[in-house]
Length: 276
Image 1 (cartoon, helix red, strand yellow):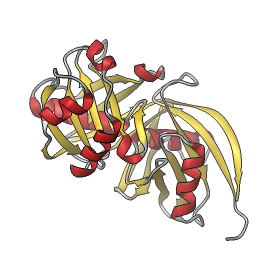
Image 2 (cartoon, one colour):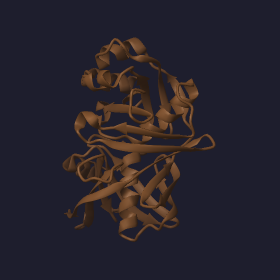
Image 3 (tube, one colour):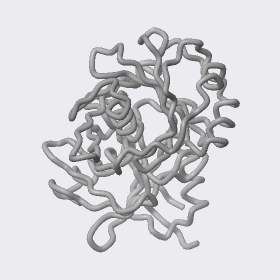
Image 4 (cartoon, one colour):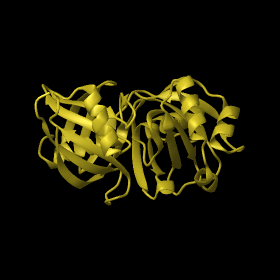
């Protein structure tokens, strides 16, 4: 491979405060990099997600990598990517088109906030609640436990109180195995015991992320789950996450018909260059 030089940034998503929310790396103008190189860069940067983005006709191509694998879609890395593109004057306010492994997705930039349109929440199957109790270390989980998707397959289950949520100590090895067996990338545990509509934690050791600070895709799934089960039926939600990692952030969810938009603010914290 010939020498490659790319712009690299660290952007904290779902927050307007540096070092809060969910950090993502964004690497610009890198279509010539192969998958193994992208995966190596994601491992070197060692954030929960690294987005590689370049301009294509009518939109932007974005590929998402955890330190362990490529994934179809990542909410917080999308927010980080398009906030950066907007700040650099590369993406205008209004609707932009993102081409990803999850398909073509609309991304709205409005008033300094980035919104990602997700697919209609879909239940893929029911998860074994008793197994999750053992794996997550709590006898007090609240079902039903579902595998769901809005573009990325994830598990979801409830817990009654915020304290119990913070006290969870999952068996990461068993959770990774459970996730692979059930075709999901991780499990989101939520509680309605929150100063907002709900609070949550997301564990994804199967893709190299023991705990994700603030998860956009899981927030869209949570909103769909709450509506589907009748636990909290609304058109607009605000969810909080990140407390256990001291990276508190907020995700906004608004429904357009049966499709959720997830949105939030972001802040750029580092800028550099990759030379390969």
